[in-house]
Length: 108
Length: 108
DNA sequence: TACCACTATACGGTAACACCGAGTACCGCT
DNA sequence: AGCGGTACTCGGTGTTACCGTATAGTGGTA
Image 1 (cartoon, rainbow over the protein chains, first blue to last red):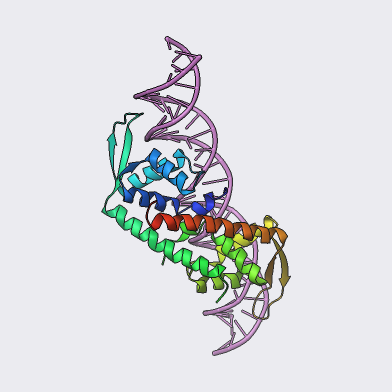
Image 2: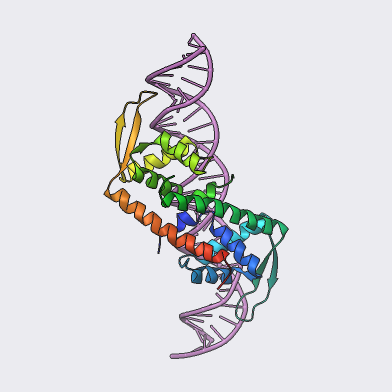
């Protein structure tokens, strides 16, 4: 499935938040996770821009740690603001998706 | 509910296609329909840009007809390309939304 | 040693989209 | 004449995912 990029706008960041909320992880691994989740076309560059944005917006705490198989990794965990943002994301998602589904199922 | 605009990117156009697919209608009425559907913050300007895009991309057939309560209306109906686009939209929506829901329900 | 694949991050630029704001215009009511 | 509701247009804005390229560490292999 391709051509999903427009539909992912506004939701991909939420997905990244959810993944980080599940466990402390880093950009490259998040990309692989998204790929195996079905978003096969998402590449590292996209995830890194999201991670930098999350950091800039103060939603995550970052820890740089060496890796044994490559360059150092930047590990991310959600802080309180991040968890709040994640909850808000799911609330929005539920709101939007339920309404779109109801539109699909036929009017009224 | 506000702050939905980013999440609507890529889906609002599909919603407009679906509404047009249901019955021949025009911009102002589509906006009202979206509002009562729950997308209360969507305004005329947004819908008109979508409609002009649909027209430019050859997905709709347009008929201008006078109104008894205001300026003439531009009525829209889907053509073959529009119906195809609509089907593709729902396929994408099902793909994306199912995957996001599965992410929410817990990993693996 | 040189090359390559995999791992890992950064960053400038692009296209698409929803949105904003201001403008134009037609109608009915007071 | 003025106002609110109806109806469309258009230039400009901000956010976002994406692209391409660069940098760099590790291990395998020819």
